[in-house]
Every structure is written in structure tokens, then in C-alpha cells.
Amino acid sequence: MNNPRTFISYAWESDEIKQWVKNLATELRNDGIDAKLDQWEIIPGDQMPHFMEKSVRENDYVLIICTPKYKSKSENRIGGVGYEGDIMTAEVLQKLNHRKFIPILKSGTNQTAIPSWLSGKYYVDLSNEQHYSNNYSDLTTTLFNKRETAPKLGVPKENSKTTLKETKIPTIENQVMIKGILIDEITEPINDGTAGSALYKIPFELNKTPSQEWRDYFVQAWNFPPSFSTMHRPGIASTYGNKIILDGTTIEEVEKYHKETLKLCVNVANEHFEQIELKRNQEIERKAIEREKHKKNIDDINKRISFD
Image (cartoon, rainbow, N blue to C red):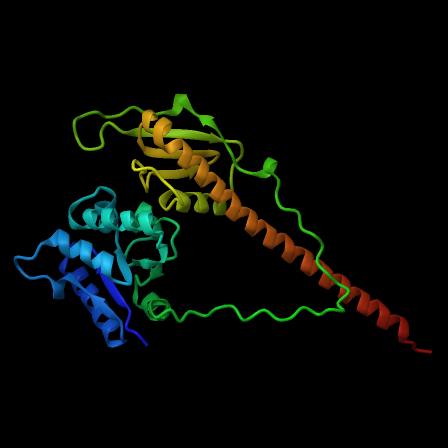
């Protein structure tokens, strides 16, 4: 079995977090995972940007230690965390290797500690002793690619008289669509000369209020779209009620770049949600058939039972 190579990205926010990360890396290495840590790899005189780029590019996985401080630095592109965030989002956009980057919740909550560009990703909660004890194996089985998989499909019974009814796929009338831009709700840029001060918030009205599942699919699609322009901005999309909000762009960028990506991500979210609904409908029908079979079996046997 190969030893998976794993780089750990974290914020140097305190001696406590540095020691916690070192302990985690040590435990991973004791369990056969080749964990790479800057505390062991970097010496004075090394080029930090080169180390970061090489570590993200050449390792099989990147563990991202999420704290409120890490989230702030990542989203505001501050220091090494901000630079690593740029490298990681660029690699995901280019290679679509989403599973390489695993969020690890160290403190806070998924809302306060996980950067928006990782929103919607399956994270491993190691935020306290109990979670660490329960979830550490979830991390190692993932790194060793030994997670439980579905059993092989069996051969359908040829003579079975009970079959699932054809389930209708949701029609276009039921899909979420963008109606247009809510002009009156566009905010004004600060324009104080600081980085990003020329950007502002633009809301888009949807034809209906989507479910939370749809929202998660959309944000995930926006952060990692199947195709994108050079001006794509991961992490700026959110949803609220019947609105999509891009917080950190301009109306000119929407016209030139974001419009097509928005349409694409809405379609991706619709497709994912349709598959979920299809499976749900099939499960409902399957249970209804089972209930009918059970009731018929009881009726048939009851007719044969006599107490004369």
C-alpha cells in the first residue's frame, strides 16, 4: 500500500494551533500517511511562495485546518494563507480535483471557520476531543482511499411481477431560473482606493425560492464551475430567499463574464436536484409497492384461514 502524501495548510495564529497541527501531522505519519508540514520542511533562506506552490501541486491531498482566523485570512487574501488559497482555488479550477482539498474544522463552526470557497464541501470535524476521537478514522480512511463503497448490483429477478412505475423527471416549469437583476438592490462601491473597494453587491431574482439542497449545489457549482472565464471569482456567490447574490463584482463583469457562468451553475444545481428528486420519488413508489404487496399477502392468507 502506498503512503499518501498530504500537505497541511493552516494559519500561524498562535503557538497552540501550531502545536495542535504538529500533533495531528505526527499522528498521521505514525499511521503511515506522509504528512508534510512547514514546521519540518522550511529553513531560513527558503522561498516561501515556491514551497507553497510545490506543496499544493505535488501532494495527493491538502488538509485545510479551518478556524475563524484562517477563514478571515483566506477570504481577505492575507499573508501565506491568502496566497495558498489562490494556489488551491486555481488548481481546482484547472484540474477539477475537488477531493484533493479536505477541510478540517479545528475551531468555530462551519459557517464561521470554513472559507466561502470551500462552502458545501464535506469537512472532518476535529474541533474537540470527542469529535477528534470519532472522526479521525474518517480522515485516514479517506486518505488511504479505503472508504466503504456500495455492494455490487445483483441480477434482477426475471419473473418478478412487481415493478416500479415510471417516475417523471421534473419539467422545466419546476426548475429554478434567473428572472433578472434586482437593480434597486445593487449596492454602491466604497471606492476609497483600497483593494476591492470598486466592487459591490449585485442580487439576481429567481423564479422561485429554492430548497437548501439546491442552494448548496449552486454555491458548490459557482466555487468549482465546469467551465469559467479568466475573471471568475470563487467565493462571492450566496443565496437568500429567492435571490442569488454576487458580493464582490461589478455590473460590467456580470455582462462580460459572470452571466454565462451564472446560467451554467443554475443548470448544474437543477440537474443535481432533479436527480435527488428522482431518487426520492422512486423510493416513495418502492415503499408504496411494498405496502401493497404486504396488504395483499395479508388479505390472501386471511381468506384461507378459517375458524370453523
